[in-house]
Image 1 (cartoon, rainbow, N blue to C red):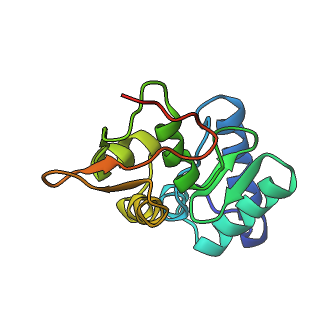
Image 2 (cartoon, rainbow, N blue to C red):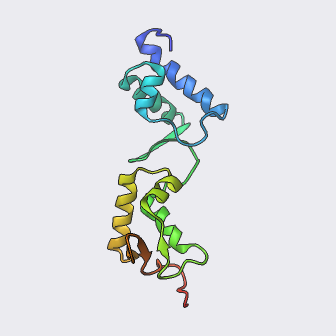
Image 3 (spheres, rainbow, N blue to C red):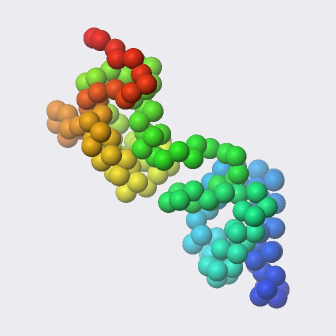
Length: 150
């Protein structure tokens, strides 16, 4: 990005991001700050100011630990709640195999660390546990769902 005055650079970045959002090039999650630093060739503080300006205008919102998103898109609940919803799905029974960490990372677009944290919370609640072999299985269904009998 061509450097204008250092004071206005963040405005150029925010305007560029605003255009990408309105053109549909960015539809939900924004690239990470480090990616934006590389893409625009500016400092992290410039990116932070650009994001703050877009947030102040209601264009984007931040989600603790997840990044920046176009306002009003996607599921902003904690990952553990989103993963627990898998157990509320049609046809899920006690004893069923639970998805692997890799499958959950791909399905929710989350890091392995975040997925492991969600799994640990679910194990702590007694929803899932170690199954036969190396996998996990459903131990009980979450509240708010009728139990199914085999």
